Length: 405
Image (cartoon, rainbow, N blue to C red; front, side):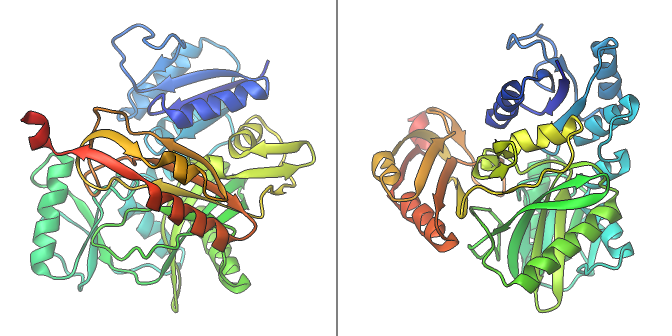
């Protein structure tokens, strides 16, 4: 039985999706995760306990735990495990992204330097350790290695810059953080889901992000595919992503890229050495010569050495809404699910928030309230279904003061 290593920061929905996909393909899964390392196998799945903030030691711990067992491929879920996964791939001589590429994907400033060296359009940028910068306003402050737009704040003047710096410092838990700051890039935002196969990019999907992401925070909500942009723009997105991936050294495995497009061209925001996050992967499924496959199955097949598949999207159009947290407080319940599910095109609604959970919106927060999925004959129909369904939902959230009283 082929054996695959699955690196995951948590044992949440996305991890289970990959594990279930591997089981459908007849593979054995060995999980490496940074959950509680003190308890002996708390979830009963014989996972290898690691600390992704200590990648070298964690990689050696994984090698030791394998005890000579053959591994045929690996997958890293989310940003945190990527460096550890790259180190393990290097030790096991498995094709994957290089260690330097994985490290660059976790450092927004280093990523910008590599893009710049490759001749790609890059905004003015620098690292700062105080609330002062030589970048003109408006600018955007970003933690070097957080993901999902957490801690990303636009500043339009010096006062907003000072406030944003202090706010991000609190998120990071330090008074003097080193942050990335760059000139604000106007334009439309997109995402590309792809596979690097021994250095060549295979584009699986280009997502439109129909909501304007202009700040002060940059919470992503809607992803709709296929893109409604003209062919030339889509080709520019693909070409720029390929150049950026090569500049970083991304070689073999999934990539998730974010970019902005304006009259000056395609500006890469970032590329992750991992697939699309959360439950969003469920929106993608493909027709292949072997039948219908999910994104997770596609990535696992590549990881164990399958050639690049000749695949086409299984749906004319599909989309997902990452349901934003409307306000901070303690989640009680959500109303309107039945009416939202009754809207044409809605395939599924998954509320990931749990009763009693304290919800924190961006820029401090790191999660969503749930996910809406839709499929349809056109991207416009999918977008409309998602917006209508979201409009039916009503979240009951108690403020912290109400809970205390």
